[in-house]
Image (cartoon, rainbow, N blue to C red; front, side):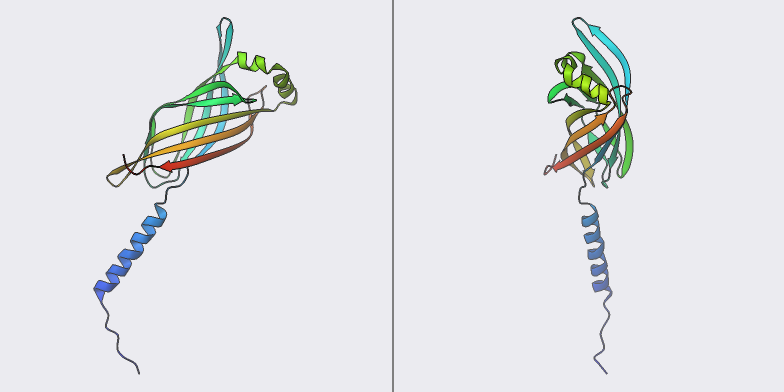
Length: 184
């Protein structure tokens, strides 16, 4: 027949440990978070002569697909209309558990003066009930993996079509790019 093979428990354990380590490394590869604008709620108009500002609450669904919890610092999201800065939304510092979803409610302020500068286009958008807004934000923070904190930055670009009459979200395209730094 053939030569008898001697079984080695130490070789089997080393092989199993290598397989587990390889699986952990592959599943630990950082993934880009996802962002989805759920709703826009009008809260008030502020008259600060000669300026009129609209205050809104943006509800954003955020998914952390990674195996590490994250902590992020506060930042400001810029909101653009027809290439001009229309306003901003405040992102408060916070944290999110691994592989989880949460809703963020972002207070936003839009400057009516900027809309007035684009009055012709704005009125056309109101007539067709579709208005294209762009937004951009950089979110910095740390992700804790084992006992090390790893710094990261996520750049998010959003292109959102809304109904300017009822503030319904019609369509959106969001892209997020994750950048990791060596260590904190």
